[in-house]
Amino acid sequence: MRKSILILLAVALLPACSLSQKKVRAVDARVDESRRVGLTCPAGQPDRCALASPLREFGTEALHERRHHLTLLEYGEQSLALRLHLVRAAQNTIDLQNFILRRDDSGELLLNELLDAARRGVKVRLLLDQMFSFSDAEYLVQLTMAHSNLEIRFYNPSFYKAKMAKHDWLSAVACCFRRFNQRMHNKLMVTDGLVGVIGGRNIADRYFEYDSNYEFKDRDVAVFGPTIREMGESFEWFWVHRKTVPVQHLRDVAAELLNDPPAGLEPYQPPARLRRLLESIDDADLINSAFIEPAFQIERLSYFSDRPRKQPSEAIEPGRDITQELYDVLLSAEHSVLIQSPYMVLSRRARDLFAELRRRHPDIELVYSPNSLASTDADTVYGHTHKHKKRYVDDLGFHLYELKPYPLDAPEFFPRWPLLIQEKKQGIGANSGVSGDNSTIPMPAPRVGLHSKSFVVDGRIAMIGSHNFDPRSEGFNTENGLIVWDEAFARTLERLIRRDIEPRNSWIVAMRPDQEQQRTAIETVPENVTEFMPWFYGSTSVYELAPGKEPLPPDHPDFYRHYYSVGSFPEVIRTRRQINVLFLGSFFGFLEPIL
Image (tube, rainbow, N blue to C red; front, side, top):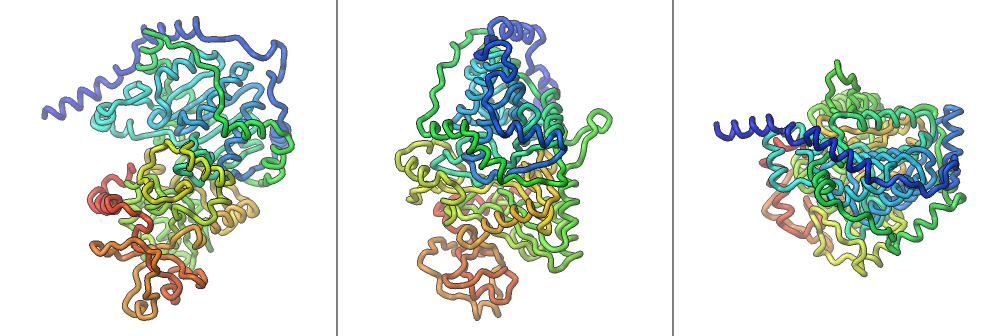
């Protein structure tokens, strides 16, 4: 009874966590009187001293002629270069929305480029989810006061704070679980209403080939054409929503600002390893060859985005069920579905969909490309993937390919790979903590994880966005992305995913052989298999292609003559990680919808 009363009191007092109107007025007055307003660009310059950019011309033509163009962004540094170039080329507005922005080399560089644009006269709006972005109250005050053209807001800040203490996390779970757990997972950038970027990448070194400890293989697209207007509208929904709070109205930021305002920002000097990138983004020929020449002209595409409350009241915020829109596209498949996502945790809704697909088309190819335990940064989620592997592989008939932590094609996935190896040796850019770290394996290169969220249906329809095809994306996180009806684009994306699942880059999950299959299966386990788990025997295993053998699907009668088992968790050398995964999957199934 006492616990229940405390929880009810916490819920009742939650609105009181926000600043009083008196303090809001005091904060706004302090900001208005002290924030810098001067411009570095002379008055009367219509372009606000922006960098001349072929992307602006390309975007303007596409908008006026109502043509859609998309450019796939497969490489991290390429994707960062595009964002930086667009910031320097912006003349009027920059809207940037993201789930995570870290204050590491990439994040701080982008923040300073945004600030430089604001000082030129560009209106810059930065919208971040509060939970995992940088939370330094002093730095947020410095950014807020740096210029009136730069405005930063946080989505759904728990207890109206930028930085949550440990007890805040516990209190938020106890008093207001649904509200606390509902996050803004969208990734979006639009400049001058002409050019956009959308996809899976957050803003941090590991998404842009600058983390020598752990790198994400991810995917974005550059967008040109009428869809830009819809992207801008969805940004506006979030920007003005009551769940979105200006950072100066957060309690810890306001206290810093009112009590003892910090000194201004120190002059920014980019790290030496970023200077080559900064020089390249001003090269118009390079920008043209990287982002305009490879662009696809698209006849039909659809932008989707949740409303800010995820499950809106129809009377107040009429919205779309974007998950159902994606599932309707998947349900239209007749021959093949290829899905790439960091996690494979299918909701009942998704399982029913794929069971129906299998019923309609018994021979349909269902391919899923997620992380292995060795490559993931989310062990807790992987525990629930492992728990259901039999259901996915045997019952639904998925071909499940798990990314290796050190794929052989990594030097081609990451053009900066040789530099990352040098930086790791020198201890540069290796400060990020990663769940499930395999740092005791003496590897000279970064570990690789998968973060892209895409699918291809029948080689004719593609999707790229932030949706993970898991219960969180269905019911908690807001998501956005593009559905593209274009065969050339879809076929290109399919080739990229199929390359990722080739034996040199991924393992394949299959059922363990029955007695009849065991008679002809490869018996000798090669010496390079280091994982043995005699204390656990599951119905599935992870398999490696034997030398000199041709790849086969796991339902082929000769599969076990071509592949050998490497255990359930290959290249995971810490027994504790394996035990944790089995424990979580076995006893914490109720957490699946939120993990």
